[in-house]
Image (tube, rainbow, N blue to C red; front, side, top):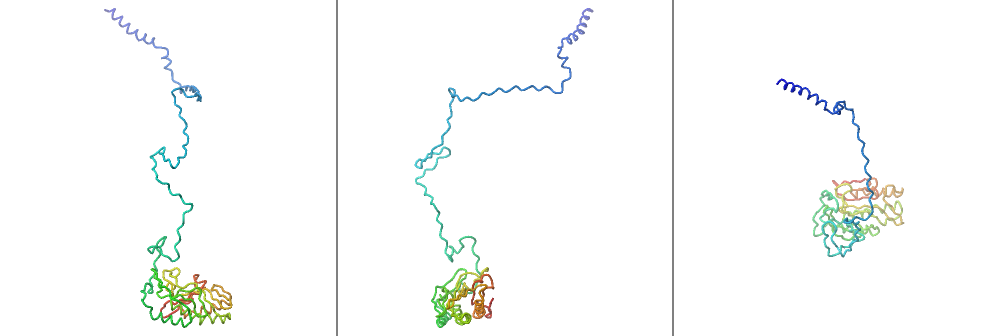
Length: 320
C-alpha cells in the first residue's frame, strides 16, 4: 500500500516535466517581441492578355453585321417607322409652301378698325366732350347757313355742297362746303372742306387784307392761297380736346402766290420783304379770326398760319 502511493506521487511529479519537454522549439521563438511592420509581399506581374485575333469566328458563334443606313422612303410608300407607333396614312399631298407669304394690305388712313377699336395696342383715349359734337343734323338747312351761302356768292367765292362729316370721337361738320375759290381772282389750293362761316371769313380776309398787303409790299396781285389743312377729325396736338379743324372751323395757310410769280412761304426766318408781308397779314388777322398762330407760337405752327373762329367768352381773341 505504501509502495502504491509512492509510485502515484512520482507520476504526478514527472508528468509536468515531460509535457514541458515535448513543447516545440518554435513556441519559444514565438515568445520573442514582434517587429514594428510586417514586410509587404510583392505583387505578382499580371499575365499578358492575348491580342484579339481577326480570325473567323469559331463554329457555333454568330457574327453581328454592321447596319447600313436606310434609303429614303418614297412618298408613295409610307411604311411603319423603325421605332415608335406607325405613321398615320395620308390620302393627299400637303399643299406646297409658297415661295413668299403674302402681306395683307394696310388699312387706309382714316379708316376705323372693326368695332371702333384700334388694330393694335390698347384703345385710343376718348376725346373730351364738346357741345358741338353729336348734335342732330336738321332735315333742312338752317337759315343762317343759307344766308352765309348767299353772302359767299356775292363775294365771288366758288364752292359746292359736300357730304356731312361726323365721327364717334365727336368731330362734326353737318353742312360742309368744298371751297374752290375765295373770289373770282383768288384761288385756294387745294380745295378746302370747311364750314360756311370760316369760308366767308377767309374770303373777306383775302380780299380786304392779304391782296392789298401783297400789292403794297411786292407790287403784285394775289392770285392764290395755299392751304395746308381745313377739316380734319383730330384733337389739338398733345391734348384730348378736339381741334377747331374737327368742326371745319379753321384754316391753315402755308403759301401765298402772286401774279408776278412770287411765292411767299410761311417759315420761321423768311427773307426781309417776305417777313414784312407775313407780319402785316398775321397782325391784321387778329380780329376777323378768334385764334391766330404761326411761327414762334410753337413747333406745330412753324410752317403755317393758323386761323380759326373758336367760340370764346365775350368774343375775345387768342393771337400769338
